[in-house]
Length: 91
Image 1 (spheres, rainbow, N blue to C red):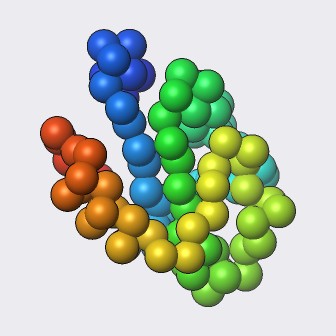
Image 2: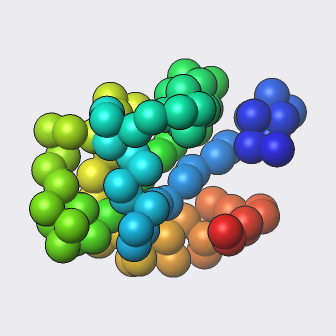
């Protein structure tokens, strides 16, 4: 669905928090790493909570290259939702 939204000219930003941050690591096996990279290559912005990464002993050096660590992820989500978003999806 996100790929289709990008293809239709929508701006897409993903904010990954909690245990989800483990899925943004270079060591990620399977299709998810490929999907995140594909979405980023199409223009999606992908952010991972650096606080949640730190709590799990993960460093930003181990992130997929397409994922940006951010310390104030919840403030960024609110700001993005208020200023840029036409649609919000939560999983």
